[in-house]
Amino acid sequence: MRGEDINTHPTTTITCPECGHNKAAWWLQQTRSADEAPTRFFQCLKCKHTWREYD
Image (cartoon, rainbow, N blue to C red; front, side, top):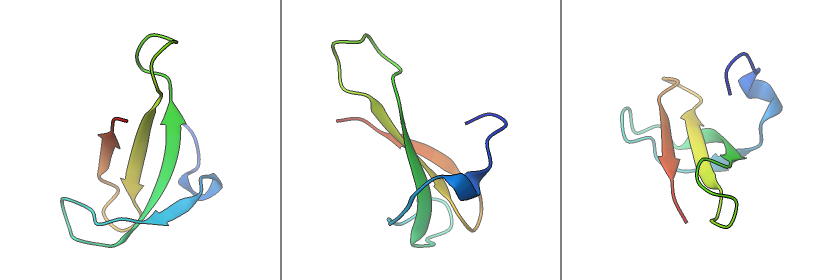
C-alpha cells in the first residue's frame, strides 16, 4: 500500500488491536507463493495502524 491513498480501498467493520476503533480499510496482497491464499491487510481509519490476517 505504499504511496496509495487509503480512501481508494474498501472499508469494513473490524476492531483495531491498537486503539479499538471499529472501521478499517482493507486490501489483498499476495505475500506467499502463488498457490497459497493472499494475505488480507487492514489499516485503521483512526490511528492508521496496519495489521494482517492470513486465511
